[in-house]
Image 1 (cartoon, helix red, strand yellow):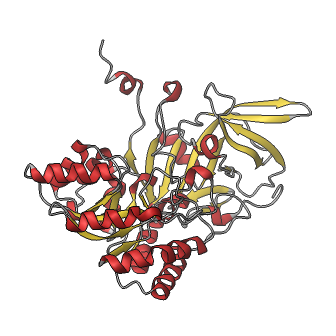
Image 2 (tube, helix red, strand yellow):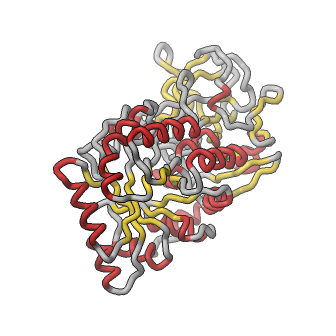
Image 3 (cartoon, helix red, strand yellow):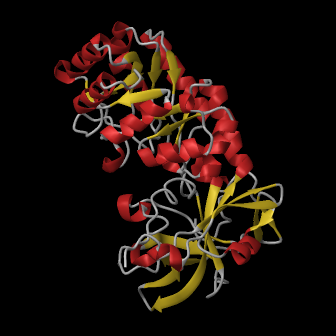
Length: 424
């Protein structure tokens, strides 16, 4: 709250404060900002690895990292090194995973509208699992196999009709959704029957995903109860509950751990009598709290009697979540962490949109000045991956830090990059 010390649980595992300066992975964040420029994504590598290990320990070797949360070559390699599969949802994500050296059999291919070319790519490389999402996708797989492609192992994505308590745009398990085969009106059963009888697919199991940023874990239990008859009667040997476990973004929020989530999922599976191997697809919980985004303050505009605007050199191009979902964040002065946060300001970006807001009501110290560095924690998920070049702003660099050593894993874009694909 206003005036309190910044909540440490929102920072990466290795974060420390040294004489008021924020240090992550043994690296001074202000020094990193000077060296690599801003905006800058800084990831605590040991935090990433620890969450991957926790996921493998909790769910076993079939657990898959949901790469849509954050993906680059270095991240795909890290995930594989720590024993996780990797979940991709487009040909682009698949390409990055393969480029990183992830064995194709350790890739799970998702997506509600996989093109024929993307499915063909997956079959040519021998991707381990395809999560089938629609009748049209079944048609495409059958046509490709008929023309000589390898028969894939598939899971069917079921829509359990569960309303998870999260933002409307993050609900994926309600009946009115673009994802999966609904359990109602016999649709899910018809899909199981067709795939099991098709010589073009090897039916492996059932998949469900009820939404993202879910704090009420009882929602997962409801989904499992609804799906249990289909899983048991289908002869599925694998059952994935997907992902969606929420993380704390602002002071006052608390979230469960991956291990606690896995325990509750297992209890629900046992109660429902599901004998299939259970897996999951955590993404946000692996990467969100592992990173901070560092900005340089460009202007401070005081509107007497109304508010103070602090504009930074990024915004909705590196973090569109506040614009999309009204997501909340905190802000921290990286050189004055322990100073009382006595001033309430609105942190905004540099884009030509009034809605370009990063933190609506941020508590910051009075020592904040133009040219200073601000960081928003818990930005490891859906910042880099959902970023854009709006207003032709350059995409930020990404740095992994560990044991006092920074490692540049994604270079900052240049102006030349902006026109590299233009045809004169």
